[in-house]
Image 1 (tube, rainbow, N blue to C red):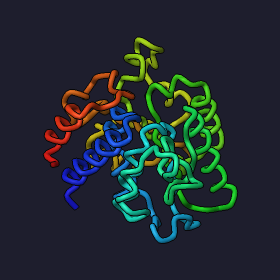
Image 2 (image 1 turned 30 degrees about the vertical axis):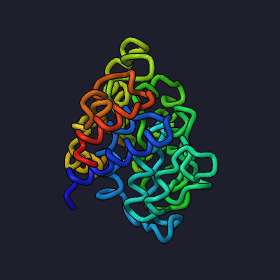
Image 3 (image 1 turned 60 degrees about the vertical axis):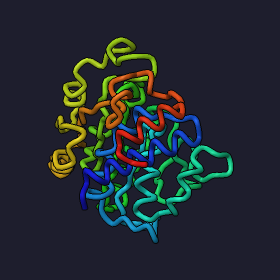
Length: 267
């Protein structure tokens, strides 16, 4: 597979979805494309679109669930549901809601919405796997603004205490959130040192380098959960959205849409 080409295709699907529904979150959806692609196409095991609830599959929890267009585009590409469904994002009669819903969308392992909760749910799923002696892993993608939530740190503390080495957090560290930069709103300080202090194995990578992300996902330490800080660009792939916090949840005009699609070289 040409992963660079596929990433561009996924970004184009995100733009199309968000323009069609005239709502949603372009900036953070575009920033985590390579992160989710790495998990779904290269890392997670025993995934089967024909059997989404396969017992031994690796699990994925999208803690920053507002970026779900990225997940939907990938799930459709993998055959979990028809690509035509993507045109109905955020419509009341669609299974593709504005945050992932496991009761509606094939391939979604966990509902998400309230920031911080996904991390704790993922830790619980990993603990459950340990309890029943299952060998699947649980991956969760977090937002950096989300790490201002106390629930994240309760999850971090408990995961280390229970030695959940089957739990991998990937942070979409683009430095921006809805109201500005992380540093302006509530500084995270050195997020890697914080997770390290909580007892996690920690690694920092280029969040748009799939090979680096994949290697970090496989570089696990027995007895320790893994935290991968993925350095990303909010709005990646569309120049006028890149590093602009205003595009966290901004609606696209027709001019914006056409300019974005032209940059992505999609008609």
